[in-house]
Length: 274
Image 1 (cartoon, rainbow, N blue to C red):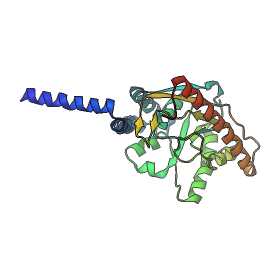
Image 2 (cartoon, one colour):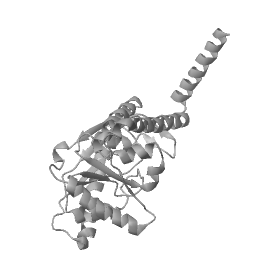
Image 3 (cartoon, helix red, strand yellow):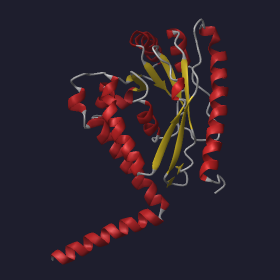
Image 4 (spheres, helix red, strand yellow):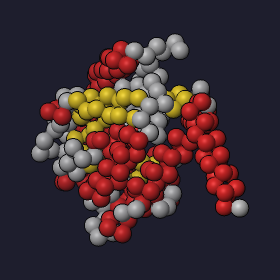
């Protein structure tokens, strides 16, 4: 009986390994499941410690380290350029292009090198306990996207908060996930915060996830380049300058996005037509 049980167990493991290696759809869903479970576990395992200092950005450091380890185990390696461009001794609004759930790996790389980080997220995430509780404990600011007035009020309060704390507020200006050849048009929220707080914008461009394709169910291993660009000052700008600021920032980030992606694809000799 024990021998039969061992045989069945070995056969089951062998079958799973076979499908993982040979079937990209199976591998895609397995990797996504592992990543989602690891993200939740990494975020929630330290909740008892986080309760000792609620809403402190340092609460995310251990989950960030844990998630980076999982990312490497799944074959995703991140490199960061431009650390010398990080704004020092000042609040800033950090802009990052938004592609997929893998962006959490990007945040796990950024969090330890940016002092006093915070993020803005839709309020629905808060109710995804225990993960939502963990995000609140490391200082996530929640907004109601369906209520424009409340969202605007939250953003205005956020401008004062990040100035008082000299915090770094990470935001995805595209407003939704997108991994195309160009960035989506930017939303105004991040720029309202920057102008209201008179703090600089800190653009960060993340190369396209060439190893990830939801339509084709592909999730392979690959490299990600995270490039921190020089800050864009907003001192003296007013609300009427927001369109120009958005346009300038978009053009800069979109061009850099294309360049870092092209450089990455050449380095791995990847053919996008495949």
